[in-house]
Picture 1 (cartoon, helix red, strand yellow):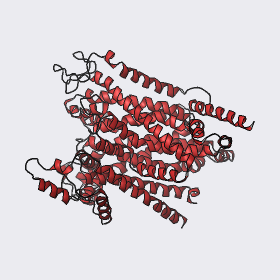
Picture 2 (cartoon, rainbow over the protein chains, first blue to last red):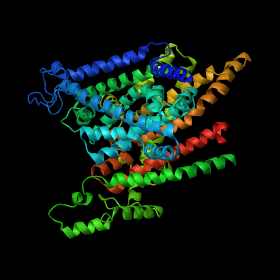
Picture 3 (cartoon, chains in turn green, brown):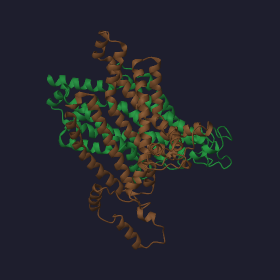
Amino acid sequence: MATNVSIERITSARIFGLRRVVSKTGTIPTLSIVGAGIVVVLALGATFAPLLTHWNPTQIDFNAVLVGPGTQGHFLGTDRNGMDIWSRVLFGARIDLLIAIVSVLAGAIIGTVLGATSGYVGGWFDEVSMRACDVVQAVPGFILALTVATVLGTSFLDLVIALTVSSAPNYMRLMRTEVRSAREEAWVEAARSSGVSAPNLLFRQVVPNCLGPVLVIAPLACGWHILALAGLSFVGLGVQIPQPEWGAMIANSTGDLASGAWWTSVIPGIALFIAVLGFSLISEGFQERRH
Amino acid sequence: MRILRFVVRRLLLLLPVLFGILVLTFLLVRVMPGDPIASLLPPGEVTQEQIKAARHEYGIDKPMLQQFVVYVKDMFVGNFGRSFQTGRPITSELAQHLGPTLELITISFVIAVLFSIPFGLLSAMRLGKSSDHAIRFGSLAAGSFSPFWLGLLLILLFYYKLGWAPTPHGRYDPATNLHTITHIDVIDALITGNFAAFRSVMSHLVLPVITLAVIMSPGLVRVVRSSAIDVLRSEAYSCAVAHGLSSRTRTLHYVVRQSLISLPTLGALIFGHALGGVVLVESVFSWDGVGQWALSGLLFRNYAVVQMFVLLSAFIYVIVFLIADIVHALLDPRVRI
């Protein structure tokens, strides 16, 4: 009988945990919808990029080098290499969004698993992993990413690893705190005493209940990762030209400002800004619910 | 007395972290690809023996563990190695680059804090009203800027279009003959009484400082706002209202004071993040600080420079956090136990 009750509570708590992420009232905040809308539009633009432009992002138009927006068939102009900016912004979204989302997912998954284990098991494992977090987190994220990217290189995977390494400890800490407090709750105690195995209890019952903060932070983190990736590319340690990437596009065109060609650096920057804003809005909506 | 014990305990807790950082930076830098010596010496003109001698001179022909022991030993006597690029000791290169960066970050941080506190408080006190929405959206937007793009926009507007800002290259006009003493330009200009240089330094600081301050503000506004909201909703505050305390007293003694308790910790976090952001800002404004120095070190695989840079930023970060904890303990007696 007791077992039935506890399992029932576990299941309801589990559903509640996931629903709690959405909101207490069951609706999604307006800001988050707006943010998600922006991100979806960008993602669609990235996916269907070949349909939205007939220029190849790395194709050189020798007849139109550094021409302004709307001239010679180039919707947003061309850069100093004669490459179409509209096309590069669209294809750039592919790289930026993909690296950001993959690295956030990787960081969140690794951080969640390690952090949850650490918080639940405690003892020396907890001690060691938290000290490791202390050390990694003592180096500012962007600087760690810079160094790791220098060590590894500039391929897709290298950059994902650089961003993952510098973000995983954040999720680890977040998850550990959540799991530690959940561990003391009566329903966990009940499940434990009714013989639910530790891994099962932790990863199927406790973790889903504790995911809230991680899920709220994740979109915001996508924004940060886009910024970090663009920053890496800007200083030449990220995506390399002629590959289309927003930060690299800006880096490649800082010299154009003197000749009055603002579009080569301003336009990719706007794309960058909108993408980060979109992701931040998603998180902001949920965070505001707490007040 | 209590606060002293608190500080000592925090310092002791820092030791293993600092040691870990040492190991981390050492390893990170050693696994870097490419042979720094080979890439520095001109090809053809050097013999194998010369390369060997150079590797021996910089101590990178020894086994890893031995290198680490030497590294730690040297560090205790203030010897952080020499730059592969210039052959000069790292410490003297660092001294030259650290001042300008600290100057930039500190001024930006102070300005960001001064702007964020009133905005955060205002936003909380007008919760749900249009000014609150405006401030929230403004800080979201500010947080969405990449430092380098914002810097470029400011350069485009204030230098190329309006012509108000000085050339966005370097920290002051060399024609002003600023005599360097501390490598912190503002201080140097003041103690040498060189007012032309002081004006030049200040005008060069404006755009990079705005850039960094805009990047730092959103987090600060957010934390002030959310702690002020908590205060406004607390029973203590309701009690103060019920007792008929004037709104001035309530704001100053309840809202402001209590909202600022969480500021030091978050301030430290933001200061630390700015250490990363400053690399980009320096790059845009050709600001000859630690960030620029480290970037060239990274690009040229200059072990000693990269090591010093990572170590330094971690060290500054840790120290800033320590200061924040102490300030926090001073502000909030509950922490001191």
